[in-house]
Image (cartoon, rainbow, N blue to C red; front, side, top):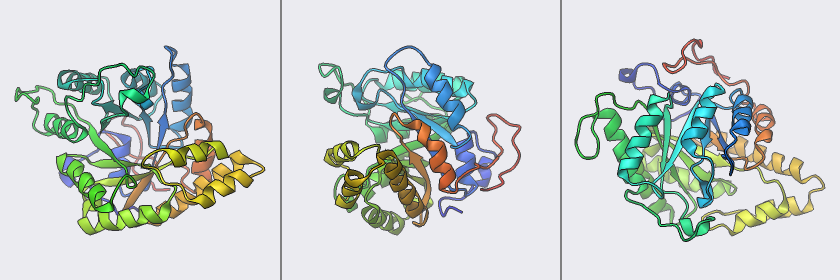
Length: 329
């Protein structure tokens, strides 16, 4: 059982499967699906159909790495049509407050019940570096705006929303991007703004993540939001060396050496991810894992099964209805 926030009895049944699983105290699994750089949603629907049995919700990235892709809102609808529980990622990079609020209303009207608020990778790193970044709001302000729209039924301008969006609100945090104290302070701002679940940057350095979690527990934030730790299974020694050079990601040398020595890189990458998931489950305050198997989504089912996290629990929500009560796993 998770040691995260407990069920708020006043909220009654959760709107999304992810919210229901977390509020039931069950260790959650989310999986990321990267939309393609074309207009065919077939792969998204296929992956969603496969992953929905092995994950509680599926994240749809919003033009990740600032590269133009099929939009996260349309991708989330494809996941819904495949029977999944989408997590709509919304970045402030490409939209002002009018567009962000409008997209949230549209998403909620289509049945999307999870939203992840983030700034997004800077446009200079993508395939349109000359693009003008918007950043009308930052990720904390977007989180607060979504919370106000849902709980107070008000737009940022103060006008009433007759049918407020009912969504489970998430944000992201990177435990490795700077002094632990500052990262915990930033996390606290997002939770105070209204974030109910947090998905973290990929964890390769478990001891450093444990240190961050100790500070999170000391601040009490794990009792106010569910923390889901990021996991990326490495596919090759080249891939993990690349990750080690990304600012804000730390990779222990031993993991790089393991991948360099591996006769079966895919098998070794899977073993490393499994070891990390098992270690993360033992850290107090971690409520789940967020698996980001970039262009390797097919590995998620075996990872989840081998980690002892399959089958996923059946659980009641107000979204799809019909499922039985939580049965654990």
